[in-house]
Image (cartoon, rainbow, N blue to C red):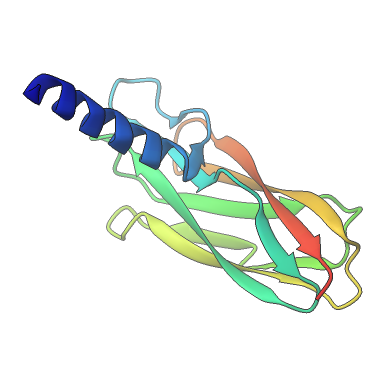
Length: 139
């Protein structure tokens, strides 16, 4: 009975953490323990026209990865009603690996779901990127 309960608790924890964020492929060095991933929301963030929302972005650093990472955010040129601040930021090796970006939908932004690309570039090693969605709805 204890084993079944413990297994259910572990599976619940894995499921709960897996549903909240999505990770990029591994960036950084090819050596074991010297890489990182960019974590973004798994589900689309809903933003009303004229509204600004904060979105949490974080780095999942492997144990030996001790570099600064430049994060750059971009959208397709087709959606001019969506802005991201800061568009570029650096997460220092000595800082907490999470940030908040502000995504703003202008009052005349086209309704629909749009992709935001997050590119992480370390000081040395391979960059990595991932994307997350923002859904713009009427106020």
